[in-house]
Image 1: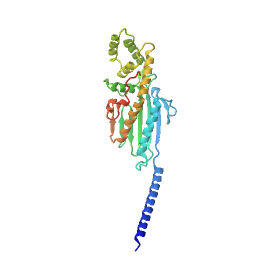
Image 2: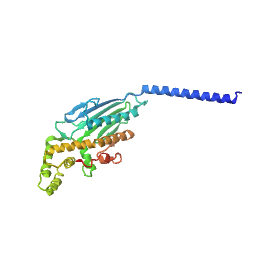
Image 3: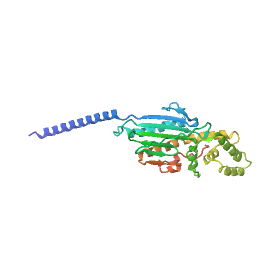
Image 4: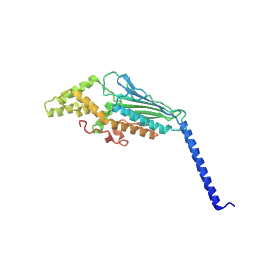
Length: 297
């Protein structure tokens, strides 16, 4: 009979050999899996909706530095990371995932004809899921091929309406929020100037504001009211400055809001997710991250 110390030594050697074998097997399996993981090919297109002009192809490098470029870069990376989590070494995928992301720049004022607003054509198959909201429209299916289609709307008018709603002003969401024809917008500017800025007294200004608030779209009235209230220069220039400030200061919140919607969508198995108003997101997103408290500062 083998001595006890020899039996213990033999037992330890066997354990070491088994552990070494297991490590080698796992290493081989990991290498094999890495070689067989699906490569995610993401198509990215950025479109200026005015005139339907494409401003970028599969890269954002050609975009000028701007809040919009930061938005496209951040959101496209965020979606890619989500797709990687789903597709990485997933054995039930029959082919490489198909991911198409469209980033649409929708301006407040329409200076050129828009044939039709850019929209996402829904894919329909078993297990297809959809997200419909003013900020992103997303469709996802995974059989037989993982397919993701998304339209992200960088909508200047949406920025303003969101601020209106978060400020406590009641307004009915309009979907889609389309650009305003340039001649109509200049009429709005002139009406506000005549009713509020060039009146003879503070009382007349208050009366003018109360009156014009009923004639203008709520998001336009919010913009005009938060622009510099001066007649030292053309009010149109002050409005343009206020719009740039609103978009610039709200861009981070707008981006985080969109990321929150993406996260919820990919974490959910719900077939249809729909939002109409920023106020619907209170349980999903901290609105203070997006709210602009004083535009003139």
